Image (cartoon, rainbow, N blue to C red; front, side, top):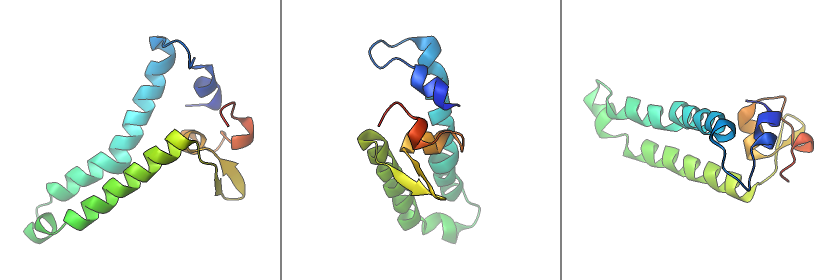
Length: 103
């Protein structure tokens, strides 16, 4: 996913060929970072881990909510000396805040 692909997706008119790669990218990221991790905990073979992972799952949920709020509010975040919007930070190191059209 590149900044050009994000910037080329029209905000006024939904076009499947523009938005489908973005939607697939975000679902893949959220599944790998959040939902898959919760499933691993819930299906763990060790009963103690499975039975006592509620707080950890709640923590993952809170991180997910915070991430979604940052994206919705377009919060600029410093990381390794550069400024990123949440969308730019998710798409890779070539997507810096200064290059994004959404600011």
